[in-house]
Amino acid sequence: MDVPDRILTTHVGSLIRPPELVALVRAHENGEQLDDDAFRAILRGAVADVVRRQAEVGIDIPSDGEFGKTWTWAWYVRERLGGFEERPWGPEGEREPSRTGYDRRRFADFYAEYVRANQSAPGVRQRGQWTCVGPITYVGQDAIRRDIDDLLAAAAAAGVREAFLPVAAPASVMPVRVDEHYGSDEELLFALADALHEEYAAVVDAGLLLQIDDAFLATMYDTMVPPATLASYREWAELRIEAVNRALRGIPPERCRYHVCWGSWNGPHTGDVALRDIVDLVLRVNVGGYSLEQANPRHEHEWRVWEDVALPDGKFLVPGVISHATNVVEHPELVAERITRLARLVGRERVIAGTDCGFAQNPYIARVHPSIMWAKLDALVEGARLATRTLWP
Image (cartoon, rainbow, N blue to C red; front, side):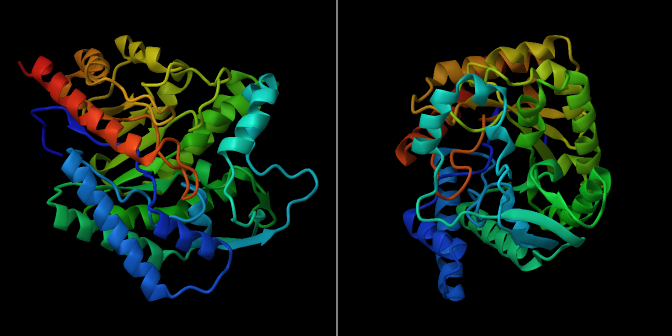
């Protein structure tokens, strides 16, 4: 990217889907027969509309809203990988490791109520346990080509110079799995990385920016510690960092950014790992930029990490200055304050204003009302304009 002369804006990727698209994705998930041409047309139109709206609001680097992804922000990849078999869950199978951690145990009554109200997907079949039964291969060429083509066409129609496509990191694709083929965590992870490399390279080769989403890198700390220690968690995380770099091999770092967050839910988050304890691991990922939470009250103070941690030369930050987890719309002056205090530490040209996470991590669950999502993005843009006046007087 060229050196900016103002604070640019973007977000994490996932946006709230229109009802007609949700209905088709639900039908797909439930195995119903679909008219592929009709689905493609509705998807293409929805992507064009959401990119146009982002451009109208003033988002400099929009995404496709992740509209082409099924199931979730990360597990969509399972439909694009060969070597796996879906089986019924066993009696002790855990479907989601982030639902078993310290925070969930400490606030069990809250989470029992919260999950019922906020984390269900009505009318969608429950997926089974994913089991690796053979060599992992990438079979999603048609799907990623469709996503790329839809976003490129939408960006061109909206007059957008840069757009980004989010993809899943190896650590986040299958946090729960059964391995009946490779025999070691390292072998399976690296095979995953080799397969995902094809998707990553396709995005960048098409001229789009690549965002690697890796929420599980941070959230697994809450699941592991205690009884595990920070040292053992870091050992677990280091292997995942090695895997994502393997998936990025040969891809220009300046065309990529890495997103880490502490999950997307509106909960206590008392078991979150501190950014200071993992920032060195995050900075090992061979990308140009790092997208991190800074807007939620559990992590907003961590902008001070950059007072004594040097951002490597040529790298940039995408701080979350808007929360996706509350319906309160941030005041643009607060957004500007969050931007300027960080920019004064790392450099004004090295900050792109973003969001903490996506507004809808799957097609069925919206974190805020759609009208509020657009109001938040508008506040993001206005806050960036105010910060620009301060930083480029």
